[in-house]
Image 1: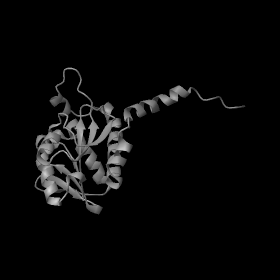
Image 2: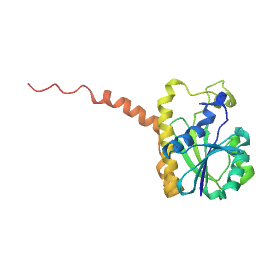
Image 3: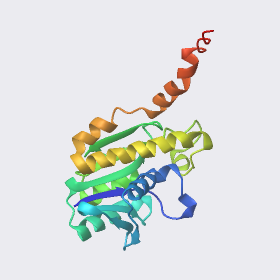
Image 4: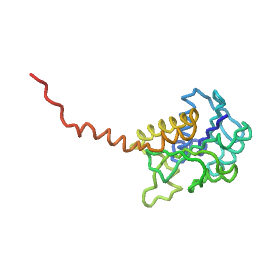
Length: 206
């Protein structure tokens, strides 16, 4: 049994916000596996082949641990088989990072999960960048991605979902090797500059 939980805030008011990056990733995973979410007490839950459980807590972010704890108890999942997907201010948009254990780094949903189930679960951090000058962090994470960020966000969600697939199939080490060196923003910038760097094509021979 493997449990993947994406953290976020429920309801349309928070849809598409930076704090809901975890929801975006687990939604993408569910689509890949053709899974449908159904309501349980603390979460929307989808069951997949091979004992896969994918969940979106319906508690608010700061109470995410209550949902994770209930899901682990209901489905008989050990901490080593839990992966929590969440936003991270200390990573720029375009970066993802996998780790196990350690502190919450100020992410209150992760802290509540640590407080309730201990620190042994894996985390997939999805970078949402630091807030601009003058923006408090609380306001920034509840803001939506702007239009210019959406193409990069789409690539991030795809890569984060690929990382989950590696974790499900081959474990944390394999997923870390895939994910932790990615810099999707830099890759996109290099791709955009490539035609200009190559110069004009040679004229055709006559």
